Length: 102
Length: 237
Image (cartoon, rainbow over all chains, first blue to last red; front, side):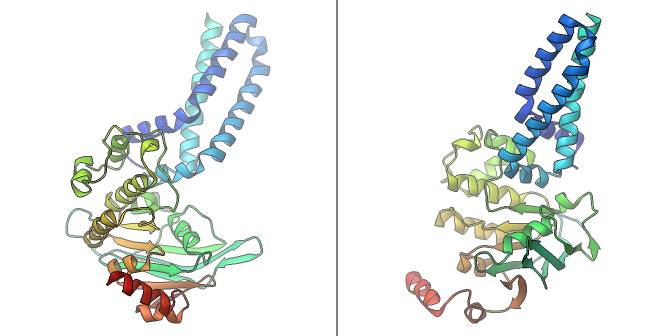
């Protein structure tokens, strides 16, 4: 694996492929929690996960050639998805917690 | 063994026992390829004979039913450094289209100014996005970054395709220089260009590899014909 700073930059570049729709969805779902409370969590969490799975499928289908770029730089598919999905879910959980606190 | 940038030590990449099926069709069997520092190794064969599949198996991009890929006798399948030791230029464009040229050179720790010095006809700047390059320019950037970035081996699948003759000459000179630092395995149908930069030739046929020595062997294998050779010679004259 490349050095940590470079790895972070590459993960960020990869995450950008699906960050916009994913973060937009996170904001909307956070709005629901803010409006209706934690009772909606059992609905929005599966919805978020299903949407994320669809985004992964879309990127795998449309951008599969680009994985060679990252692999040449020392990052394989599992690492790219592992880091970027973790990042996305951390943002999602933080937003939900913030909505609960507010 | 890795010593890029200093006097290069000799590294040896070997692939054998590769068995690959696509459905019921057997793509690769009875394979042996050896690539080493200081030598250009060519992989030749007709369309669909399995050259690209073999390169992808060596790189780790394609899983085979069975395979053994070793660097200096050690298997690379479980090596975390595999993708740093081996670089791979695929046939298709692989750089994300939204990236700028300078980001790509930065990712691969390369100097864009040196590239511009070597290829003065490349009419684009560091801030240009990859999507705004022509097909040939993209291919040139891709071939350059894979060839010139740090690695022990590079696998080049059709590196000369789409590149202008002038730039092909420069690229061939770079390969001749770089092969002193790393092992280079090339597959390209522009066989004259490949013959000029390679020292060892493997011909693939029916999913198997055979080590060959001369252009006459390529005729005997049915990869080129006498007419092909004659017409190329005539064009050269």
